[in-house]
Length: 328
Image (cartoon, rainbow, N blue to C red):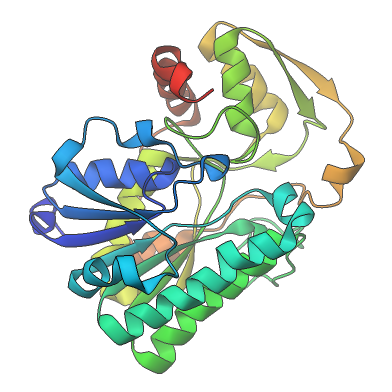
């Protein structure tokens, strides 16, 4: 789809007050789409009213669970595209409160799909899944045919939600695509703690000129800057060849956590880090080295990440130097 194709297009973004969701909402609003955000506004899971600051009457916000049909029926019924980004992302929280994670990541998504099937069975749907479901890689890079072995409750529930979307595509004809994301970062991510990934808390310490911990440090990861991911989401919505498929979406070349920590401190000109042993409770669910083979997605959509890790970190630091008070 071209940028002009979004003008006046009715779009629903679930989880639209969160980090990735709000970045997408802001882009869509700028393209003239008629955007409805559905979000429970749970601050502990990343929803932040400031993420939607300045949009005013350009969007509609429905504060509701995506599984609740009553408040969301009208928006779902009229939507041409649905970006389903709602969910709980903390791996440790899922292990400590597994039934809550079940409700947020699995049950809510199945209810939501049922609402879509009944109210708008031909709406284009893009669901954001996670690379966590692969577990510790058997080989690198990890392509979509790698065995699935989730290391935590969150990974199991995300895999189930992804499978629901693909099942509804096969059986009910719902034109859905699932994208497995990896280490997304950038402005508007949660930085008060590590619930949206370790890089958030690292950014906080860099901006506050305090020390953060690097556990292990030799693990290699790839990172996706959030605006590059927004590009990927929009391209997916306009690419019918991706319907019924699941894709990895990676980023730039992999880097070790120690290399990322050094680059962040250098880029920020503040902060420092300390190498630590991996905490035992975290090691149990850590996947070690991971970087994606996302050639299938790039070939299908033409997507290419445009933002280097250094540039993405610089933009993130600049954002939080100006707006940190809204995220702490």
